[in-house]
Image (cartoon, rainbow, N blue to C red):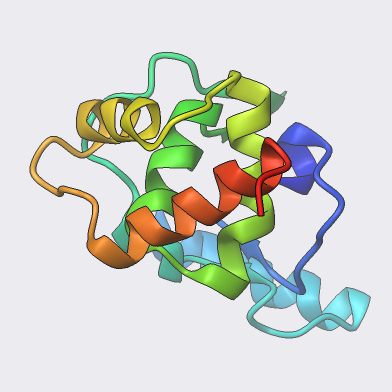
Length: 141
């Protein structure tokens, strides 16, 4: 979110999907050693939340021989965070994304989510989180 969408909240790691896996992990550990970072600064744990649906609007932020960095579109990020439904970890990001996309209802979020994750409906917990996010965005109590 910080890299691609100028969100204020930063974490201590970078969620990524990368290949070839072994080579990238080795190089990430070398960078960590050289810069004094956590060995887990490049985190591939989020890859389980990535949709199998193609992200036609992913944005390339860096392109160099041997390294290409793209970021998920706001729609894909919104869907991943809505499906995860993590109140403390994702509420601020969801707020940024619904504002960026001009969304005002849970149904609008659900429509995007169903396109990105066609086989994963929103849980009740996710819906409640989205209601809170949207109410706060529109100044409701």
